Length: 101
Image (tube, rainbow, N blue to C red; front, side, top):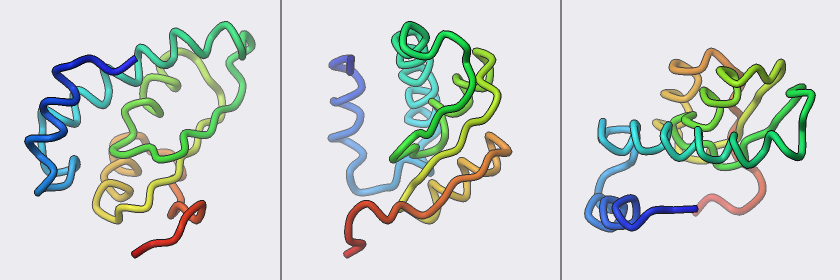
Protein backbone atom coordinates (compact mmCIF):
# COMPACT_ATOMS: atom_id res chain seq x y z
CA UNK A 1 0.00 0.00 0.00
CA UNK A 2 2.93 2.36 0.64
CA UNK A 3 4.60 3.83 -2.38
CA UNK A 4 8.38 4.08 -2.69
CA UNK A 5 8.28 7.89 -2.58
CA UNK A 6 6.49 7.74 0.79
CA UNK A 7 9.25 5.61 2.31
CA UNK A 8 12.02 7.72 0.75
CA UNK A 9 10.48 10.85 2.24
CA UNK A 10 9.98 9.07 5.55
CA UNK A 11 13.61 8.00 5.79
CA UNK A 12 14.81 11.49 4.86
CA UNK A 13 12.65 13.15 7.50
CA UNK A 14 13.22 10.82 10.46
CA UNK A 15 14.93 13.65 12.37
CA UNK A 16 11.79 15.79 12.39
CA UNK A 17 8.21 14.80 13.24
CA UNK A 18 5.76 14.30 10.39
CA UNK A 19 3.60 17.07 11.79
CA UNK A 20 6.20 19.73 10.92
CA UNK A 21 6.62 18.62 7.31
CA UNK A 22 3.89 19.89 4.97
CA UNK A 23 4.77 17.36 2.26
CA UNK A 24 4.42 14.49 4.74
CA UNK A 25 1.05 15.82 5.92
CA UNK A 26 -0.21 15.79 2.32
CA UNK A 27 1.21 12.30 1.76
CA UNK A 28 -0.53 11.15 4.95
CA UNK A 29 -3.85 12.38 3.52
CA UNK A 30 -3.20 10.76 0.11
CA UNK A 31 -2.39 7.46 1.79
CA UNK A 32 -5.53 7.82 3.91
CA UNK A 33 -7.62 8.21 0.77
CA UNK A 34 -6.20 4.93 -0.58
CA UNK A 35 -6.90 3.18 2.72
CA UNK A 36 -10.52 4.33 2.66
CA UNK A 37 -11.03 2.80 -0.78
CA UNK A 38 -9.96 -0.55 0.67
CA UNK A 39 -12.05 -0.15 3.83
CA UNK A 40 -15.30 0.53 1.99
CA UNK A 41 -15.64 -3.14 1.09
CA UNK A 42 -15.55 -4.16 4.78
CA UNK A 43 -17.71 -1.37 6.19
CA UNK A 44 -20.27 -0.58 3.48
CA UNK A 45 -22.52 1.43 5.80
CA UNK A 46 -19.69 3.90 6.59
CA UNK A 47 -20.61 4.09 10.24
CA UNK A 48 -17.64 4.07 12.58
CA UNK A 49 -13.87 3.83 12.33
CA UNK A 50 -10.88 4.03 14.66
CA UNK A 51 -7.51 4.99 13.18
CA UNK A 52 -4.76 3.62 15.41
CA UNK A 53 -1.57 5.60 14.98
CA UNK A 54 -3.36 8.33 13.04
CA UNK A 55 -0.34 10.65 12.69
CA UNK A 56 -1.70 14.01 11.48
CA UNK A 57 -5.16 12.61 10.75
CA UNK A 58 -4.93 12.01 6.99
CA UNK A 59 -6.94 8.80 7.13
CA UNK A 60 -9.42 10.36 9.55
CA UNK A 61 -10.03 13.22 7.10
CA UNK A 62 -10.45 10.78 4.22
CA UNK A 63 -12.89 8.65 6.25
CA UNK A 64 -15.01 11.71 7.11
CA UNK A 65 -15.04 12.82 3.47
CA UNK A 66 -16.12 9.31 2.44
CA UNK A 67 -19.15 9.60 4.70
CA UNK A 68 -18.15 7.71 7.83
CA UNK A 69 -20.36 9.01 10.64
CA UNK A 70 -18.11 8.54 13.66
CA UNK A 71 -14.32 8.59 13.34
CA UNK A 72 -11.73 8.75 16.10
CA UNK A 73 -8.00 8.16 16.29
CA UNK A 74 -5.06 7.43 18.55
CA UNK A 75 -1.59 8.97 18.24
CA UNK A 76 1.30 8.83 20.73
CA UNK A 77 3.17 11.86 19.34
CA UNK A 78 1.81 14.95 21.09
CA UNK A 79 2.48 17.40 18.23
CA UNK A 80 0.95 15.11 15.61
CA UNK A 81 -2.00 14.34 17.86
CA UNK A 82 -2.72 18.03 18.42
CA UNK A 83 -2.47 18.73 14.69
CA UNK A 84 -4.78 15.79 13.91
CA UNK A 85 -7.37 17.19 16.29
CA UNK A 86 -7.05 20.63 14.70
CA UNK A 87 -7.26 19.33 11.10
CA UNK A 88 -10.07 16.82 11.64
CA UNK A 89 -12.15 18.22 14.49
CA UNK A 90 -12.33 14.64 15.79
CA UNK A 91 -11.35 12.98 19.05
CA UNK A 92 -7.75 11.76 18.95
CA UNK A 93 -6.46 9.98 22.03
CA UNK A 94 -2.95 9.33 23.27
CA UNK A 95 -2.08 5.83 22.12
CA UNK A 96 -1.83 3.42 25.03
CA UNK A 97 -1.27 0.29 22.96
CA UNK A 98 2.46 0.36 23.61
CA UNK A 99 4.83 1.95 26.04
CA UNK A 100 5.94 5.56 25.50
CA UNK A 101 9.70 5.75 25.80
